[in-house]
Image 1 (cartoon, rainbow, N blue to C red):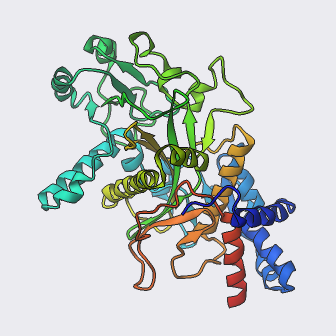
Image 2: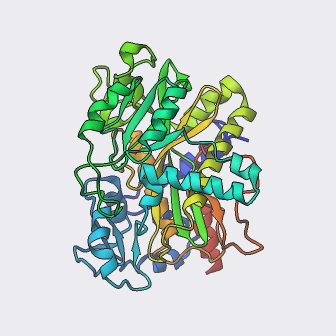
Image 3: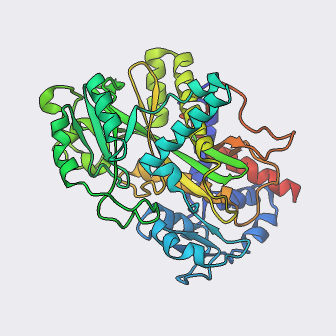
Length: 458
């Protein structure tokens, strides 16, 4: 059951949150410890929190992650190797990661070949491979569930196959460079002649995936465009959902309850004259902020919780719960498709930004997965979401060694998605069609309860 916007739980959680926010420059988890310590007159919380000697390094100093790391009261360092925790860009990994030895306790925010999930052509390759593998194993029912990505071809390698399919199924298709983000290089087309310039100028590039980020010429994917997206107020949107992977072998991942819908400023249209209009078809903030109607105070985002409540009023709780369960399932299957190809490393974890489109039939489509989702905040609400989410990421990475050894079903705003290494007494997944995705995020209340339980256990 969804929490009502005016439920007793939400009112109590909001009251706790207001108390917590009065204390600055510490993380939410630490604030919970201190608040509980004051309420119960204990000293264990203060004793634990005084041992903040963790050294961190952060590549992104103008985004929310830097604020969150500083709030942990860890010690910042600029050393190349003398750190305990490093939030970096992928470039550092390519240059240094395979040439250094990390101590057991050091943690880094990317897996070595993360691009198997986040590079558009590799993602589709792995999803198709997983589907074929299941079919060969006669697991046809599960194979049929891998239907959540649009019809896709990698160019130039599959150009011939694409042309045959385009002639068979014309309409609107979309071209995307495999290694770019924020909507750069994307365009829609309805005729093969419209991509002739791309084909003429395109040159083969190295097949070494570690070199593609510095190569001037990138491969593309071409996908059948979803021509009937779900609209609100006549405008298209997609969903940004956050997933934290702590391990691939065994697979252990958490799904964040909160997220947001990114809307276009322009009304959706499939008219011929609007096909090339990115303000109509692309939801990326980097594009929509240039719209004449863009309002910097309100932005173009709507919370996932608000969206879910709105859809429930239109379609009922059962159908919307099924939709969000399907989104959760698509995310889990995408991780399973790359589990055997991504290099497991105990030093690594990764926060992914999933982009999901919902069509008018309430079917979710996986558009792409981002290895470095934007951590900049364009509105106060955006900052609050990302600050809390990143604070919970650090709690789950658990540099302070405070979490119980048994897998927790919920930590802050994160809910367990899968844990293949779970014991018999600890569920591997949440065994229900219900998904907490988009529900009220009671992270403050949950963190307080978790801190209280840990203090009681000593």
